Length: 599
Image 1 (tube, rainbow, N blue to C red):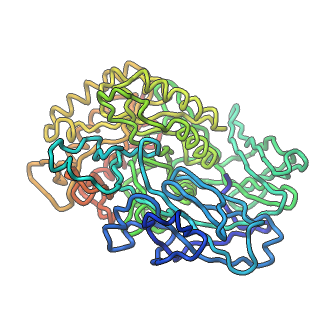
Image 2: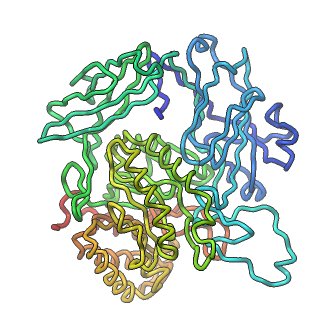
Image 3: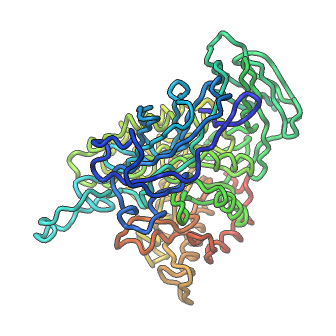
């Protein structure tokens, strides 16, 4: 799906700003709220989560449907073109109505969707209503618990006072971040000519030291029109051109896209009266034995797992924070991050393309775990077809981004308790990701703290990605034991002869707590915990990266496990550095992006 861009053939209008908002009182659909003005609306900002924009626990912890509404007008001159309404993301399910008519529904809270609306527009003002459902359960991604289960799948205690109390409907997420909801990314109307460019695929190829870009243009007229295609360099000069809906263009004197050097070309496509320019970078990605290669050089990941999470905006797009976060990454000499645990905004990936930040792009499949002795096993989850669609849509959206070097199809699924079922679930998804990606990037999933010797999914991935909390959840406070446990585990992964990357490790740390003798929750303990694990990683040539958990503190649901959120950040939620940020800055300064280890 192409991002809306304005040019000589296309117009983009922004519907962001202040909308009307009202929580469903249980009668919204019965009363047909989408057919009229909302009965008792309040004001809300779009894009943003709605949860923290109000001073009411009922809004913050709401479970179920909420309604957004606004009016808009379009210039008459645009009505001669094809008109499309596009949502960057709505979490987790959306029903969209225009002038009382349902345009359609969308499931999945982190990817875009759109509707053609030209035939349904009225002269003058039009009413747009969006119903948003934030419910998470065994059918959604991310996963929510059902039947009143609490966070991490634990049951309510079996005592009379609890059994006699029936809780109101509420979400019980099986994931450790706040279940923010709402219209999270921009709402846009864009126009195209009636015959238009549907999609563009860009594949950079290097053969015997010579670079070319292979491309494929899909147009609405199918084979009835022929595209004119040219490649422009960063200065706007044409460096190659051809004609055809599919083909290749050789690029002389190439400038490569590399970590820290985000050189971008533009593929300009003229298709009938339509025009579109897609940015791309010249770079290759592949796995060779125990190395992860970018442009045929062994790359070492230095960075973090992150979250789209800020005060007030919640999970909503905030481009100022995106710029700040990338500047902080560069300040501590990081070169990469993972979009834990869902696809991030396209605007963030555009920035990473420009800045040369490497991205592991992850689906929203988090929470497929904690089965323990559940007799239903994997059959309790009703997610596989939705999971397939998320993979298709993610790769369709992000396929041309040079910053994306690796697909992660899940975070911490239960790949050990029910191994045969897990393999049957994930093997087709692994194959699907490869099938969908024109650039055939490596594919993996991130395994949780488990009996790694029984894990049947990690060994079949292109690279082993693991989350490990030795020194925190395992051997908390005992870093000597943490070191020995990590060393023991790495002996096993070495035997697989695959690249290994640690995607999460660290310790909860309350900013301002200091101790001469480091202990848990102090800033000093976080540093010593990271040092302990890093010492082990440095001794293993097959380790190709380290992503600390987490970049910054972030919001979670209420519970005894969390005090005002998860505190594992190297930065506070408002991006103030802890001691660990300074430690990582010094460590990563000495680790080059390429050729860090001799294999």
